[in-house]
Image (cartoon, rainbow, N blue to C red; front, side, top):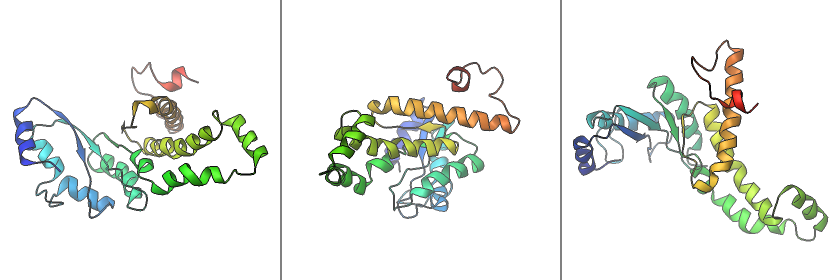
Length: 209
């Protein structure tokens, strides 16, 4: 949502780029998210978010599919990527790492239950420590990083243009994940008769393979 004061401030500014959020607290389905973007009348916001953006002079919007927690419509966050690009033809993405951050079960399991599963299993812990730097802490971090990075790979595979990956400390993981996704998608495009695009000289497929 956006307040009337913020709308007026945007109108008077020279800002022409904005992230337009498709968050519908009452309906996390694709239809619900599209209602926020195109119809309005959701959560006290009478106008549609795309309509407000246009009214404010936003000519370069990026649609944010609104990452919602697991169990509360997370699937719609990903399906909306395809819907936004097909319906609106605009750059689309989101902060999908928030799904991991809000996963209560994972946070509790990682903090207390995970370590208890290795009690009395010294040989197993030693073997795992060879693959996860830092011993138990490394194992904990891997359990967290897998869905934290994985959710972004899912989004990129579906065509997301914008990935808000969270704290800057996540940069190394998301960099390799993005390169991996770009290479796979580029190779898939080749099989369909496509290429990287005219004039493209910098791409993971050209420099990292």
